Length: 300
Image 1 (cartoon, rainbow, N blue to C red):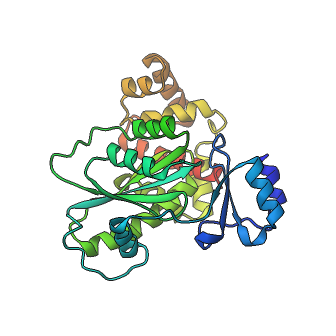
Image 2: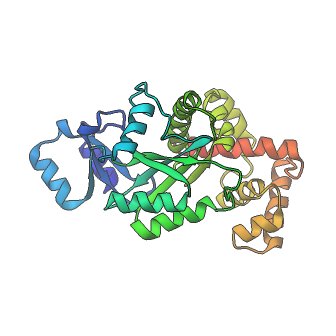
Image 3: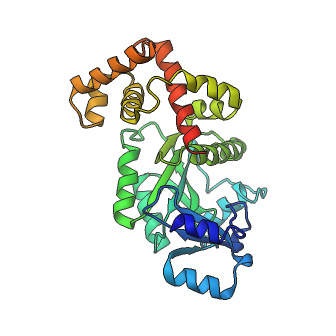
């Protein structure tokens, strides 16, 4: 159905770069990256009524902000100059989010997000589906909370898919504006190239950004090294998890719900077929780039 609608409304397909008031989003929560963004001005009244009746839709408007949220919106999105003394307390960081589906009562969603990220000063909506929190950072902040569990909590409470991008701490207003613009750009990129990932951390996205600047010839050459195993998806996923767990076989096996010996067998099988010893750090880094390149190509 998603593909059929995409074909039928090809004349109206747009993106979030479209003015917010013209965005008409048809949502498919069960489908990965399942949002069809249409230009409302290119749809007839009958088409709009039919889509509303048959599908879950999100009207393209920015949710109302309270006075403090509005100040942050004006500062970071509209780039208005203002005195932030008295309502911004540093160090601070942004937690960017994107929602697939309709959260219902946005005030409930905002309170839930603030509760999951303690010391949040504000939650600001940029569009009907995207926004950010501003979170005050201190030395006693608990960093042990798993982002994966936060994503799962939001999904179970609001029946939506959410992705997160945790930004870096900044010391002042000028740094916040600059960092926000950078993170916003980086988040847009990694969401597009890796739509299956539910969260990103600022310090970990360098590899994704480097890959985005690589030439098609470079990507193809990198991928050719995986030819002996590129059709074995379960093997590649096992190796990727192993590398993401810092080459800790026990931890990776636990994360994949398999026996340690099974994962070890898959790692050894990869080494045997590709002649790349991923138990050596330099080779592990290279293969991780290869796997990210492979995933980027699949999502184009």
